[in-house]
Image 1 (cartoon, helix red, strand yellow):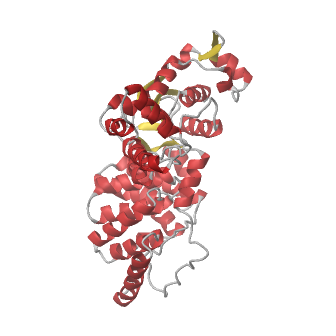
Image 2 (cartoon, helix red, strand yellow; image 1 turned 120 degrees about the horizontal axis):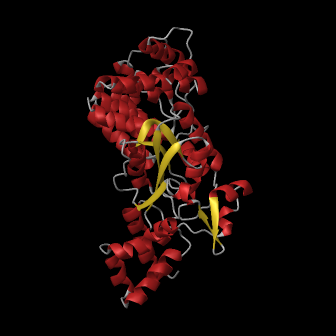
Image 3 (cartoon, rainbow, N blue to C red; image 1 turned 180 degrees about the horizontal axis):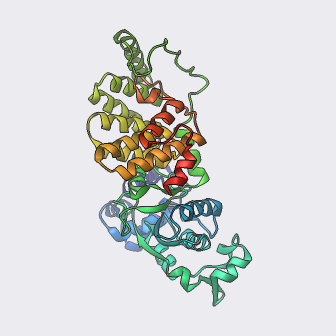
Length: 436
């Protein structure tokens, strides 16, 4: 790439972020594609790039090179198998709906339909992708043998047919799956019940731009039934793991606070010492996520809600895929009486980190205030189950005196049991079974 084309390449990368929310590949394919399209259209490169801002047909062509379409059948199938088995254990006789977001050419959507049938589920699958060419391929449903290289031979024989040297899913599998063009930045598609029982979005957040990740996460988590199954890839889990890593060794944890009731906020003198220190940190190190988050927590505890919102917004610009941040934003909205926004933030946190028991407990409180008793009860059961799996939560930023952040697993367990009316001996898993 010559220096003269560098500004064009940067503009194209920014445009892809604006249109699709993704970081395009940096291997030169994007610029080569645009140069070829400009020559075909008989336009100078700069004129063609300007055209991309308003021409839907050219934007659709750009999607093919700006997003990753690499996929195959039975890719990371164990995650789909486990999700379907959990759904079958909860409601085996109910029609269910799944959304495969970023489905590319359809292999994962058909894999999910096969897995669901084998689990005894009646599961209808919608696959979506931003690239119309890939969706056309998925609807045609003709695949080379290489795409099935990881599918066990007995399943190939049972669920696929040969056609002119290619493979096509059996009619009963195709009847369960449909495909649509959809941009993850747009409002999510909805099934007839209103929320999806399962959402699979794999190898997407890895490529998402920070400026778009929060909107994509909000769309995904808001469309999934809060008690449904979410499936992400191993690399996406690593991306989320980085966003919620514990305090770095170079940054020692805050000193333990003196003994006092957990429900008390920090004294005025303690807050007056902590606030200047945190403001100095964000002034000198504006990329310090923990400092912004800690400052927001301190402002929330002091009921300075506008300042808390500003600090959380700064943290979000740095790390949009942080479950801890989403929890605190949920608490902020709840404190301000914005229950719908609180629900959205907490559901986003739980989409990122399903074992976050504090998120389930807070969500139960939001549902109670909204008068949705069934969902409140199910959230309490989910909190008990999450406590069993992961009783100790690691936080990156100090709590700042926010009462709910100080709660330990034992206290949360007692609260859940009391609100469920359970006996002290009942466990989360027992209540889960009773609920179902």
